[in-house]
Amino acid sequence: MKNVVLGFVGTKLDLGQNRRWKPTVSLVQHPHFKVDRLELLYDSDFHRLARQLQTEIQALSPGTEVLLRNLDLTNPWDFQEVYGKLFDFARGYGFDDDRERYHVHLTTGSHVAQICWFLLTESRHVPARLIQTGPPGAEGDAPRLDLIDLDLSHYNALQQRFDQLAREYSDQLRGGIETRNPAYNALIDRIELVAGNSDEPILLMGETGTGKTELAERIYNLKLDRRRVKGRLVHVNCATLNGPHALAALFGQRRSFTGQAGTERSGLLREADGGVLFLDEVDHLGLNEQAMLLHAIETGRFYPLGADHEVTARFQLIAGAGRDLNARVALGQFRPDLLARLGMWRFTLPPLRDRREDIEANLIHELARSERKLGAQVGFNADARDRFLRFAADPATLWPGNFRDFGGMIRRLCTLAPRGRITRVMVEDEIARLQADWRAARPDDDFRLIAGVMGARAAEMDPFDMVQLAAVIRACREAPSLSAAGRALFAASRAKKTSQNDADRLRKYLGRFDLDWDALAARPEAAPPV
Image 1 (cartoon, one colour):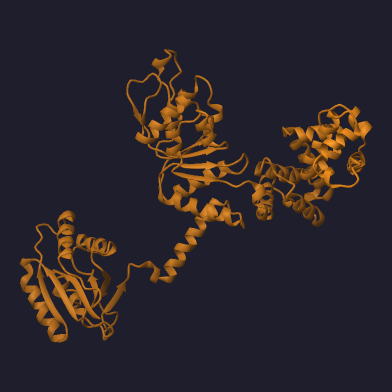
Image 2: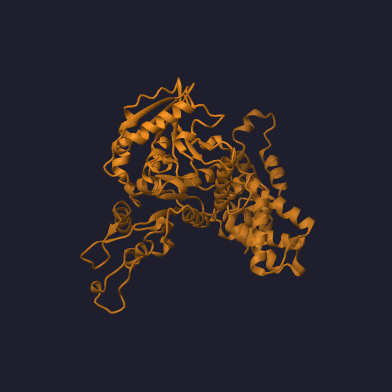
């Protein structure tokens, strides 16, 4: 393929005043770069210099074809004029990528021309690589010539730095925790791309305690690092915005609205101007607030209470919701147009029970955080650590409060650890405490029914057995006798058996749990122990 170079005549450098070095002439003096055709753009005022360079280059390199192209510029420092004329030149050139390899010489021409060349090559309007030339480093050396390829994938070191930076941003969103869950890692990588490249609203869904608030803060910090925002993060818990003061808190209030001194408020949207507004628990907002919020998101303008004129606030929005917003739309409790606006980028954070491979990494993270707060090093005894990890990773441990329960458990253990060591007894006590809290908070009729019969032993049952035993207890209490309860419970299978002793089958089933018919039938349902 032929090497073709495009460039301006250097009205100062090509005069050779700098150590007799002429950048355009030096293009053909490099031993490892052959120039088959050199096309020089020049202004009519410098036609003589262009002809002189043409003669000099052809004498040094007879195999180089030198073409002079007239390009008159009224003002070579006018960006619009220079870019427009170079753009027209590029469109009418007729590049042939299959037969020729193109280069643009950046060393000559005004700074405006150099910028325009760069923009045209980067956008591929000029399908070329860039060339920079320089004078010889020492007497007898060849002039310097550097090729710049704008395809950054060719620069391994640069690409590695970009990849490292991308990993740092993803690690920042993970809070420095080495997560192993593939679905969560893919989610974080996608959020990193969206947060770094888009200013559209981001909606974070997930159960309570899955880390929506912390992730929102990390997204804000990433946007700050990427210079997508300059202002601060304003965190609003929408669950607290109830009643007549909700609109004033969000959108501000003028004194004229109440006529009382001290009632003027700027509003949280104004405080987020230039930054990020995080609306946590956005599903708790009232319909009036939702309508005004939608207008403010779409236009950047809104009316404070009591104001005759709109005010402006430009902010990026992150919303968090713990309840199903589609279900709330169906119930008429959430505006579908607001959900469509918030849901441009929607991400659902998985619960802890679906990320059990990340439990050990989060344990290390929570230990380090507790140590920073306590100012002392804390660690597990080997058997205590093993017991905690087995409990935490057990499929029967559902972690209803997710990382809120997980982190609270670790902080309590670290605070109470004697001499900085967490023992197995401490872990067992904390497990019992956590399970008791979950039982007390769980609106589970099956559990309350069984706990009323078995007491504390109910907490030791598998969920599978709990569902089955609850059905048996209810059948027994509704039946007049053990045999009648057995017939109701084994109605389908009893027809396939030669011996239909349903009472004996039921007696043996109850015996597995140390229960008998008389005590079960006579004992009323009670609430679980606290």
